[in-house]
Image (cartoon, rainbow, N blue to C red):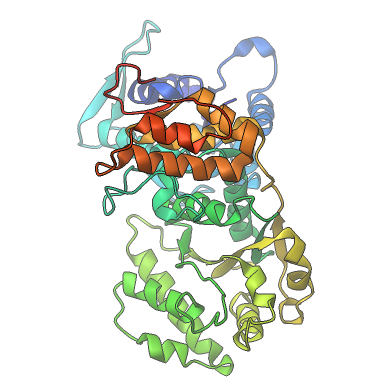
Length: 475
């Protein structure tokens, strides 16, 4: 099924073919992933055929490209396609084939120009007997960059992180962080569904609390930290994530508390004031002060964006709260109910206005009832993400072997399958982490093969399944 859908007028078919061809030439992996509706044999109206294909591929579609022209703007079918993509909360990229007015139904979405505009051009021969299609070279690259930005694949993130070149691709028992987006595998469908739901929350403004629900050990923290947040951060026209809040015993003033999150966000945007102590000292009745600090951050983030229409709202803040069950522990402290009351005040907004903030929390399924029944959150409409269930064994393979593909070593499929079959997901990941540390330790006198064998000694002696690429037996 397709990951990218092209919406175009039938009068712009040559340009649509040229755009698709250029993208595939630059990214061969897109050859089967771009849906272009040009098949006249089905006898179905193009708009209806396009909608049906998008419905079928909704769980995999990452972006819709609209090729804007006067024909596109005057086409009822193209309008239907656009509205349908919006209703599914898909990311939309707009590419102008001619200088059409900015004030149209697509005005809030990022756009690039593919028509000649005194810049270098590219000729694309689509082999139809006609003249090559001439497109703006800069605009084409901007379109490809836009696809990379909205794409969810781990391969679209850099590894290793520039500021941590020796970072291990396996984290053991620790949850993955934003820096690990490039090695977070096995949850693409859930990530895409979560992003669609968050875009929908921003669009409708009805629900204000995004609840990631799952059993203990299902990977909720990693899903939020390495799955959703890095991809939301790339969509900087729509979202502005705050640093993670971890409640522990002091959700407002703790080292990972709300005040620290606000202070870090503002510091990253260049604000020197107020100091952390001043933010921590804000009382419940000073909610307008905190609202002002957050709104100032939103506007500063918007001012950093290029070519933003005057009517486009500032990005919506996303406040991530990891392990929200800690808010209801016996040792949560007096700050927990104050925090919940504060959240209720901060997420309030007028009807028809883009929400200034969305709260995204992870919580264990067996601890969800206290969150549901918290009186402080009565006015808040939650949206539950229930899709984070334990992975099937086939998914474990990708979790174990995917990070090794991004790094410099390989973990054999036979080894990963054996790990999962005998020990399950958590133990398999821990063994992968330990074997990796052995294989990368220059100081260790123990060979990689022996380390790997020890790691799975309760299973079998599969020595050498973790090897350096320099090994002639490397897979």
